[in-house]
Length: 93
Image (tube, rainbow, N blue to C red; front, side, top):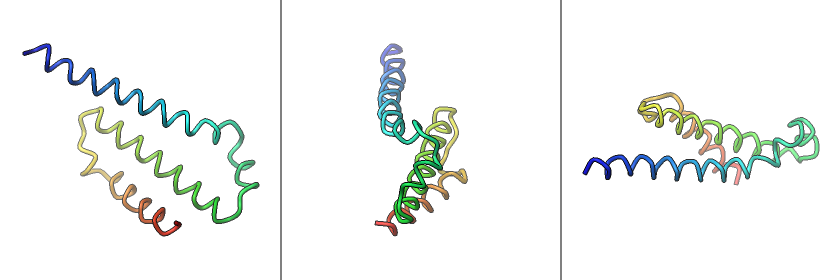
């Protein structure tokens, strides 16, 4: 029974690592060049979307970090930010 309890966190950690790897792959093209260089080539509406998506991604990663540390992110300011950014993102569509 004890090994079953230990296997669950290991599976969760492996799944988290796999998902973070996917996030990293999606963000790599953005971070290959200086952000101001990327911004200068985008129209204003796409700059706005990029900023919202980047801040949402960072807040999501911080949410995950809090969870891995045993904190409840639902009672943290990061949840307010995630909701706020989600609203911005929905408005921009």
